[in-house]
Image (tube, rainbow, N blue to C red; front, side, top):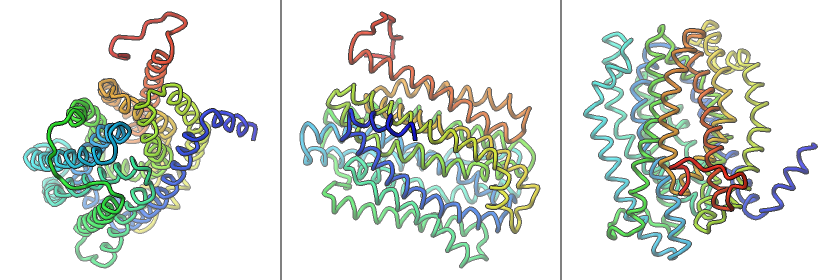
Length: 464
């Protein structure tokens, strides 16, 4: 209760912007919780059907690269496009912004097609590395599922970009709610087509993705924002998007590389480790959506607008307010879940093919993974501001450092804790990454607001 007046006082300095961010974060977070609860229900159903068996591990590895790269391309395009889209709206109006958006959508579609073709080419070689511990029969199933899931890259890539554009127009409800369609579709297909086995997961994934795409396309059309793919020429704004894309793509690739490294190292351990890592990350994913995704989704339009207006004091104030809220709320939550991990996993998963031995392993993974949530959420806000400031080169270098730290920490902690050490490694490098980004961003903002009173120079490359 003592903290509430202090938080209220912090809001008062920038009441309009911070309250809008807070309300938007509550909307996105609340609806995302609905999505995650439905996803958790789907996971419980999947766990009861497949346990930690070969079929589910083949699906997880087969879906790893398509899901990773669609997230990679979609997140990269979002971070490059949204700040520029808002800048065009602020300076040149809606019509000019729609022309930029139409040209960017053509570039987006070309990139998604290119990524799909590349994945089809390198897939067999990549899977032989990622699934090096699989038997020949299990690897063959993994390859079959992998190629069946490749078109998902195109469909869900468009879903991610269209949702980000709606968010840029401060329309948060539909993009936050439509992902509920995929877990519901998977559950319905799984229950109605049991004979398909793991193939039901593939069909349900596509049904959900197509439904999401249709709803978002209709919403964009009704809101007056263009989702057509039409080229209006290489304007300065398109060049700006394309300049920001390479460092963002590399940063996202390196960040996704953490997932690949973790899954590949889990596949080298005893059988069932990949599934244990996946199940153990479910609660972290749910918390991460509430803490990180909801807040970063809500904050990026406002940070982009403040950056376009060069309101550096407002940026700094908003970051401080929401960083404190995230850390105060989610550090105790993460510690509580870690302490109660075993009964939580028992309650959620232990039924059917999921045994008490599985519960013991997954509980350790969950306890270690949930510790990352507060620092992942706080760090992602700083990443969003760096993107809004067009300083994605910094995001790229920090991402490279994270990948290196992930490998080193994995080697160290796996020796101590097995598969749970992989989860602990992620939590530790999230803390390191957050601290580094916070230091760099606050130095940059102070430099733009006023000269450093201590006369300490900012490292080259960290400020303009």
